[in-house]
Image (tube, rainbow, N blue to C red; front, top):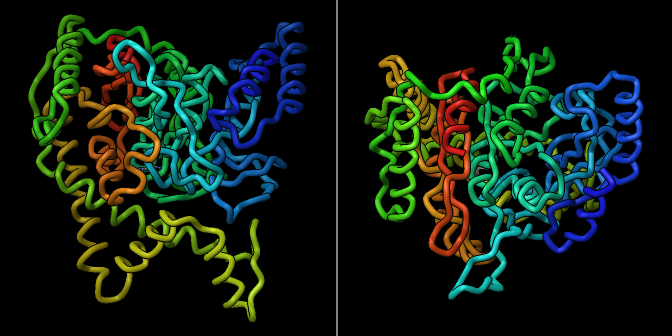
Length: 457
Ligand code: GLN
């Protein structure tokens, strides 16, 4: 814990931590020392972790990367972080993220961009251009990649665990919707949001998810299922498994390097005893547009609670309506306002059927595509994690927002269908930046994902 506290202090230029909690960390570590000395070590005893600042932490400021929650001190602990502390983990601090987890590059945080510890190689030297860590869990991914924690919590609504993991050469799993409780996690799009870990190895992810997951009556969408021994699944191998390669993921303009890596990944799995089959997920191309209707719709509803009365920031106004308006105008950033406007529009009378209802129907079709593949005997599906490697800070932020949304083309289908998905590092691009592959599993079968990802790792 002391070594990590020192490393975090030295790496402040990355802006990965929004809040460092060294005193709390040392107190927790002392408890761990005492437990270990008494032979009572819990499963995560003394492991120093970073917490995405979307998880409410009792008495520790939780901002969701937004001005509107500046100074907000929750008087409760999220279910996921509670489970980690119950098992002996140590909190190093709160990690930066895109505002309310909306973004793919960690450039929408009200508290500044996160910088990846990676750099491009140009003509044998490291380029000066700062690289994005991906988003929205950019602080989590950068901190794990830069050894500023052993592992981190993250959340994934449309790719925010898997895309930053792929961009930073780390491992990230979004478990099945309902595997982790959402209680105490700041809501973005409630029917899509899931917590999961980012860590440096598949095994570390398995161990962390084993603690984070589990039934919770306070979240009615949380599954009442026992948590399997994920760590035991890691070394199971892939002999006899059928891995599907969905032809619709060969999107136009995909980098040759990524195509090559994808083919190689299939070969590695075949060499380890898996059967590789081509499959079809015909509604894939509708997933991204449908996601960018469903997610903003739910966000516009969830964000209605930030009214200047209940949490964080309050900007006075002439009357109460003026106070609401001033608070929300000052408290929310551009991307969040864009989502609120899109969401309000697609839910409004007259447009509800044309946009929101239609997007929900597409969602059902996407889910059925996967169900058919699994019913035909496919155990897991292999795809690239992202259509490109990480880009430079500012390279995509000012452009058309749709350009940024295209980052999520391979990941949003998984949230729309509620399935588990893992991103695992698989190679480097020509400029030395990490590239990841994604495995998508059957509902509540994270074990097969850990076993398969381990073969690729
Ligand atoms: N990039 C996607 C978005 O901005 C996904 C974000 C997430 O998974 N939290 O909506």
